[in-house]
Length: 307
Image (cartoon, rainbow, N blue to C red; front, top):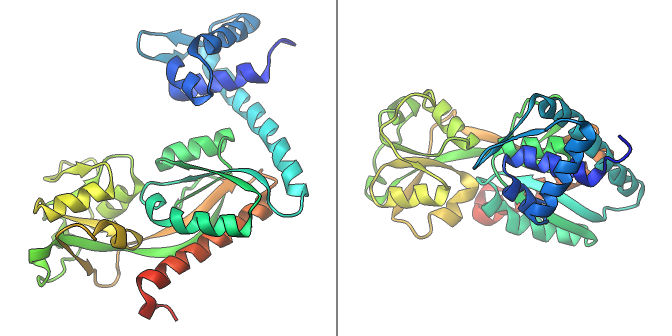
């Protein structure tokens, strides 16, 4: 097994993650033929195929399934060698890979990136916006250092740091501005527009309305909060959005925004990272910057509400 290389292991993990040679090649920035050659050499070294190859997708063989966990452990350990060196340095420098969910990214990133660049000018910041399950997967594999998302995640391998609480608000057509604000029970009988499956914000909204996600609903799903708000402005239904999204998403739509009565629907926004990451102290400092960014956003949006 002396001929197995880290490059082969990284390419194998990428194909396993994407289920497609072409997509994996793009993710690791090589040509598909070059990636395929490395996978073939790895399979030759192991003496058995790692993938079942089909026209549009590949899947792991039993050996591939067994090997994948070990490969991810190896790659994570190798990546953390660099983290050990960075943790030993004063300050925070070098590449930092942070993931963030789509219902936070567009609203927080402008403020957050500015604050991070000011506090840590030597950081090479890379941001990855995707859904929670993918962020968790990429944290486990070591391709992300930390992620900003809604808590709890419930993975014992991760450190979870709560940063702030955020309420959800009701967005409805402008003509309904003076109507009573519905409670969750009333809202479930209305045409509620939600994000498509996979978004944790969808599940949180359904929980407030006491609706099971698997049940059929008389509504429409959107891929973004912007789409939902525009549909509300067109009179199609109502929706819920987090407070941080209000200034951006409602400025060009004929909608009204209303606060729910207590107890309001809300979420806990936090940051997570692997407990094994030697940069835990530095990541805690990054979490403090995220918290400060959220406070600045609230002061800007609601100056009278913050003392």
